Image (cartoon, rainbow over the protein chains, first blue to last red):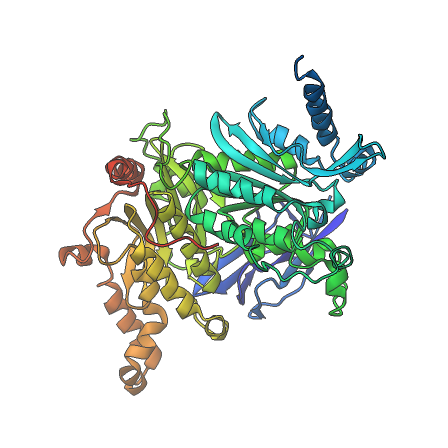
Length: 74
Length: 518
């Protein structure tokens, strides 16, 4: 088991958190949507696993590279 | 009486060169998961094609009678070879001899390799490991004086390291720890590759520790750091993948600026119209979409070769073929700030447009750019100056150019979608939308007085937005001939192949009007 932190590709604000702690997600699945440059930019799971932690809150301002969620992968 | 004894000595000396730094050092190289320089050259080039130059050079040891005991070979191996049947120059550092450092090098070897590439008009592949430069600080004790970099009469290698970018394709492969002049020779290329186990830095961890930064090689200059910083274009898992990447990159380019990019037979139908293109761009303007599948749908199947993916990510850059004709392809990535150009993206645009100009590659730009990046960070990184540099690069280019406006074209960066001041081809998709600045946010600025004076400002804002949106249709712009063609996106491939055919006779060999810089 390893833990992967999914981080933000862009600076922006958290528009919508799509998943909840404990959710099982597949590779490429949308986890969270950031708003940046007036666009909705999704952050997706790099690989399948279980969402273990959500590090940000809706509406929060996010820096590029900031950690968003932690996924536990097999 | 023949020259048999000398012939035997030649063979013996060649055999000594093949031993490199000796069995122990070769084993250590293998134990660390790395190939020796001779194995690397062997795997990079076509079988049996390597013709070495200077194999006998090194430091000889003789007994009291003057008979040769041993030769420690110079730690630079170079010569001519063929890659996929096309001649190239290959030059590699031998890490088994004094860690690839200049302590054991003969400076004229890498210099002759660079000279040979320029004079024979052949691409050069630099296989880099070690510092290959001023050597260690120990050198001062062996020479008894301090080395002024370049010094007197020693600047030619430094000159060639950058000057060859305006002459021949230059590829750098960083395979191991690369520092100092080695790092400079890797960064000063048209295309640089490193393995994920490698690291590149100006100075390594022990030197950096003196700054109070306790970092290992990977933390300081690993693939993540160097591909995101834009100093290295591609990171791969194995050395064989690095060799394959070098071969693939060169397959799109002419042997030098004096030739033209080679046109290959192609069996992908130029009329192929991918249905997916009709729904590729979402109608909801806030939603993003993936550009890479669009690229795959319009270029020759499997021909897109992306470079510098981790850097300046609002622009996707690479080489591709259209009906067999090599082109330089730029495309926006809306996933990265909606495709807006920040300082790094602008640097990337300059570099790849200059590459196209240097090697006579027609340019295709699949555009979706809402403008330059805005905000404090953008101002702090001089986005606008890097932005006008990118515009200047486009405007100075003379290669044939074709732009497809996929979605947005806004602001000054919106204008930077074709070379200004000359004719180029341009098509707008049905999803295209443009303006001096985006309506969202722009309305508040332009109609502030009217909105503030309204009894219900929010309602007035929506009302104005609706009114202006109705005028946004690209067909209204086409009526005025502000855009010349709006197309069914499924026709894109056919039109781009048509562009490549039109561009073919316009490609003009020779030096670009400016010398490309790294």
